[in-house]
Image (cartoon, rainbow, N blue to C red; front, top):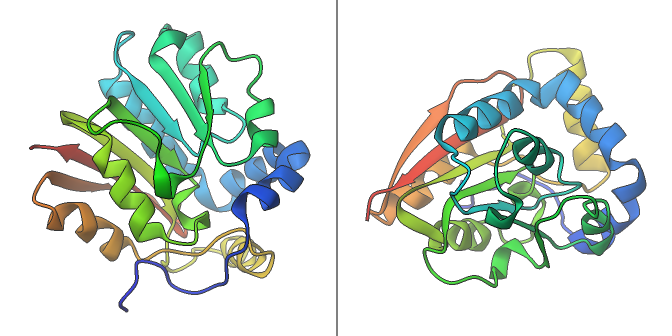
Length: 214
């Protein structure tokens, strides 16, 4: 496999999620219940273990802002949070969050090199047309000594019939691909700037913690 993604076509991700925005939270809860819940829990636990109120955090592909909203309610300063999403309709769902909101794409992040202490990207890398480019951009904006946390649909064996059905639904509806976890791990490692750890979770999903060492 020469790409970090497995199969599937990709259209305009912004237009797709503009349409999905009104029902996204309901659909996402279903995904977490049947397939991605352990990976999401692994990401949230990993971020909570390193976050402090004054660390700058980028939530790339923030969606409706559920995780950022939770972190702010737990004491993180909204002034330290940046939400980025390609869908204006999804960002509109974050109107109650007093954080900086940026309409932009993962493949071309409008931020300086090493700008953030923590970068999170949950369920977004698999939706873009060029995931290799997006992953490179996510790595670029992480400050040396700091952390990138990624959760994504992974090309792994389904545990149950529900896992399999959720996976087929995502592919058929064009909502994303299932990425090769091994290729996603290798890309930051090849740069020589990151140490990457895979957090164990079940289902067709994976969570990676990449610490920038240089």
